[in-house]
Image (cartoon, rainbow, N blue to C red):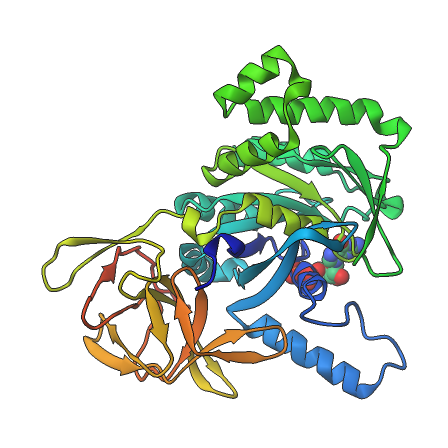
Length: 422
Ligand code: GDP
């Protein structure tokens, strides 16, 4: 049985062009799922190029991509106590036309990385997605990308998130160097500088002292962070009044995690995905602040036989219940139904009840999507995301359940897209 505390189901939402694709590609690189990043350089072997295209293709068409991240690390390297976290990154389409699709994916993810451009800040689509995330109570962290661009302004975007989106955004980092000279960040919790190594494409980093000319600003924002976090915890507040220096980093992390999950605070980070800086600390923040499937409330539904309310916990011992959130046609396996398993355990080859059709259908195979391959798995359990092969009749929004323990998951009204006729 997988330890669900070490799993994160999250999405990345952004206005088009803010850098979602680049960030996702970097995530797959840093998690070891792909071995190359960036443009195809002249002279690169054609097979390399095809390999890259294939990786890109599957990544881009997948509704969910699975990868693994090691945390914590020091200077990018594993240390005693480093654990492996499983990430299911659920695609949230970035284009305004796909708003309905965004709603669908919001339903099944546990947390969100809201990605902004450091130059353009909060844009119309980031607002739309933000409000949808509010509606589905999706906790989030912010990532301000493109810090290397002329006019990049991290703190301005933090302010916009507060003023335009009404969130208590708080910076956890300050950039070291601006625009072309953007090199790294000061971590306001650990109070140290991080400079990513260019030679390893940011796979490793150096810890450096806080630059002298930043000390005052760092002190000011560190206080702001502690004050904001202390407001959410009485014990911390008492300590803050007695002696702010007595507050430990672990206390800050624990309270900030709680406040992020109950959507009281939005921690903000910065970087440049394109320049291989900051995506690594973003992944650490996904682990630290975004909820695991067991941090999420139990799902509610109705027993279609009795009309009675049923509650299902994120527990593999409960009866199986899942929600299909995206149906796709895959060139290799045909119809693929991506689903989130909320409770129970499902073996490949077994039957599930589709409550909409009233039919039991056999799931011939269950797949998990990696950057460059579709991985057949023997079973899936509560909290995980998979794709099922074998359905004859399946639609987005269908509840799938154990035939002996039927449930229709609490209906979330998702309007069908209106397709304009030219
Ligand atoms: P998406 O539409 O959000 O998926 O954005 P893309 O990842 O496709 O990026 C849009 C453009 O911005 C591309 O030309 C990227 O190379 C560029 N880009 C992405 N991230 C950065 C960054 O951190 N810095 C700079 N300078 N350009 C970036």
